[in-house]
Image 1: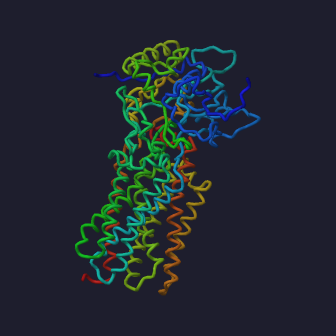
Image 2: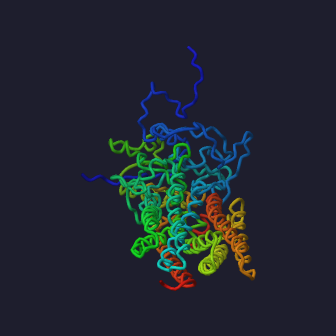
Image 3: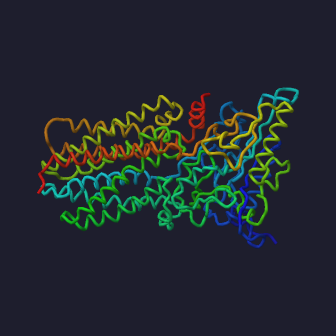
Length: 341
Length: 265
């Protein structure tokens, strides 16, 4: 009897021949025979590659980050939420700035609500998002961050509901405390990895994320209608953030000189373009703000440019990390140098 | 009940590149196929360890002979069966936010498939090219050091099938003794380039030693192994410190900015 060729299971093993109880029997397959995932080209005519001294056929020595767009999007949203939470607490009780404080509370609430949704969207098993709160692991910045984000989400909701009444102070302070963690931990999260590009910049990344969080929050607020007093607050907050972000981005590039192999990734491909775009938008935002005269249009353009720059920066960090992971020498050469070779 | 810490000692000097370990692993663990293709890199069409490939044999054809070996023209093979190293301090384990990755009673590092939610953080925290998240499955997978077989008192499938005993399995302390003897033997025979990779804390302080260590005949890079891998959490204190500093700055900026408009009520 001739069987019609059925769709392959990838295991080529019918249940009638074997019971699937192995460790990996539960692996779900959409594509039974994937290509090599773009790691190597699929050649029909095979040129034989001689092995090069110093690496293994130029193949990657580290896995690329598997995160999708929603993770850098979260990095941005979380930054805005953190900045909003801190500013809301600082503005609490200042009557003329009630409207601005309310917006900050909304930003903190939205960021800590949309943020977890974005992170969940990246998960391979979305239904298991609550497993993030299954244990607390201080050695994992992601665990610390998950707890911070969940906690901040709760107190930010409370702060939003309580509004600007005096009794809301504890909620505002708690939100600010959580917001600080949310704004900062993402930098540690990237720095605490085996990726050479991020690892070499592990002391800079938190500073970059924090200053960019301040700039991002100011960027969003600048795009809203503000009176003179509110504008004063937002601009002061923003100037510090943007200056800090620019300084950190410069410093990030300065590390290039000590690890040229990883740094190449910052100039190559999609990541390189995004990094340049982030730089240009940030500087343009600062320049627009320096134009003399007070006008809402000017402020809004500056805010939009800052926002664009901050978003590009987050995506650039992920993309350049991907590129760096593909380069084996970026991983081995710095290790050799540390060994004194 | 106490169990002994077990591991792998992979002696690459006797590996013949038969890939039986790859097949045995796939078969026992019922891992899916990786697709057919030729990589053009000697006989290595597996390319790397993956979510669906837990043993990988590396092939290098070298134009130099191994010392202590006589060949008509300078030539030698480097063959190595690579595997998850089950580090004493594992980057993936320390990074896992769900507690899916655990240290088993045999000292191995195990990903619990019913807990892993596929956050992908272990992937960037592994200093080797081991653990990965398979896109269609969504979870992270790697070598389990045949946790299921070990619980039944059996040795892992790859070690069981290895025809030359290049892969040996056993109590870690015994393996270390065995490895040292083998190294002495090779050195005595004139294979002076042989050395042990990642056996002890002193050999590899970054991971505090591997539970799956190797005897190699060339620099680690030749086998796509990092020369001095380090678990990411080493020295991450500076990163947290920088964060604290930055956050103090953020608070100061917010307070200063809020003074710009309006007096206290």
